Amino acid sequence: MRITGYRTATTIQEWGRPVGDANGVFADGTVPVPIVLVDTDEGITGVGLGPHVQIDAVFAAIEGEDPRGVTALYDRMLRHTFKAGHAGAVFGTIGALDTALWDIKAQAAGEPLWRLLGGRDRTVPAYASGLDIGLTDDELVSVYRAYAEHGLRAAKIKGGLDIERDRRRLTLVRDVLTEAGRGSRPGLMLDVNEAWTRKQAVRHVCELERTLDLTWIEEPVRRWDAEGLAAVGRGVRASVATGENLTGLEQFRPLLAAGAVDIVQTAAVWGVSHFLRVSALAHAHDLPVSPIGTTPVALLHAATSVPNHLASELQDLRPPWGISLDLYVEDGSFVLGDAPGLGITLDERAFDADLPRPDARAAEGPHIRPEHAGRRLLAVADGFRPERSPGRDGAFRD
Figure (cartoon, one colour):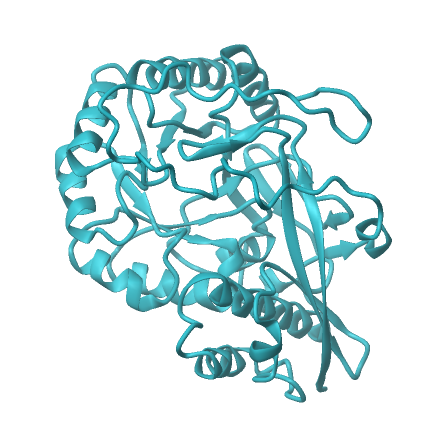
């Protein structure tokens, strides 16, 4: 079997409501989902969800190769892009191609990837994550009730701009999950997306912990600040989670060596091989791992094969437009199917439809760090309240 070519496409995740974090909000809830497809001479096509920046340069490393040698090809892609490939969007392109190769390998074997990787249990524990900073309190409750109906008993909300608003919103979500769990204590997490200084982080979390039990605080300071993350960890009861924006293993090592992270995260777009290596590194430090991403299907398969998986992020309960997944959510977990490979089915005709497109030039959004992040003296009044935009059918919905 040989790799013969690649194709790219872009679809959307259409939330039907504002989504974002402390850095900003996509008011229309429309988020791009880039896709890479890798073709072979035996008619098997692999799918990777992730960027395709500089893909010509990266693909040159694997063209004509046997895709089943995926681990060696992952390192080959890194070598071919060694001045740019260990960080940023190019690392994401490597991850997308890597994921597609794992998909091909499992399809060729006639097995779901979770089985090929050595997983025993197709069930992957999940937690709810609504990217919800732009919602009113009533909307927040409605969203997390929908998660609770699928058995989710742990949730991560977005915050970091106002202590009292965070306390109120965490309490609302706690009460929703407690009611659904018939009184059992839920897991609560707060994600502030690198919005604080070290002292701000300790002050904010300690104040919340007077009345709430936080499982973890996510990205309290800048992702590379090993000393700062360690200081936060010493100053609060909650675990410190980070890693979704770290790429090569060389970026994780200083944090683990400094005792700066308690929950090791990795983003779905960085690929399967990367996740397996980060998981092994974390396991060597007796730390759990937790995948992050809108559609983390590839890492869900990989999570079944590592001994230190904690829980995976469940964002939207619906897949991106034109994508079908061989999995479902039940009793608070992803349940993977038996389709060979990743179990991803694409309706490529849907990608050619007149889909709403996000404005990549938007002046505000979670993809742009605010000028005063980490230098705010006072709380941001009322958080974000963007104007609503209709969905594809013209309706406003959550």
